[in-house]
Length: 179
Image (cartoon, rainbow, N blue to C red; front, side):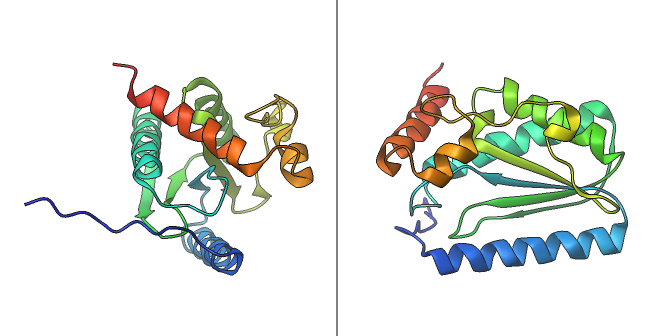
């Protein structure tokens, strides 16, 4: 017998903001408890739908790649948590290693994996807070549609959300159809 997990049609802005507040609180709890950097993984999911089979599969690949990176680097993972939420999947790792080096490897993973542009890997240092790409000399994220800085296109709503969602879905579909 196959059991399917229900997938929600969409979430409100209030639900997204509440989920972000809870994620930030979890991150702060881990930083206070472990005194080590935290990796926070979410997905780039434009539009109202944050939980779908496509997104769950994409998160599965992201989890596998992050776990593999941490294992290959032989970095000590103090804790790991994955949450499958209506507002989108989330994962946290607490890693006993310098935050800047963790961020450099996470940014490289985002830039080199075919699905990496759809992953948002934040690294938070217990002393200095978020480690940004710019602090490493890395480029800003590019828009999925026009290759301009993503934050500028997102804030100005330069592209219709349907166009961005279609690009995300095509990226995911192309990855899973590659074989």
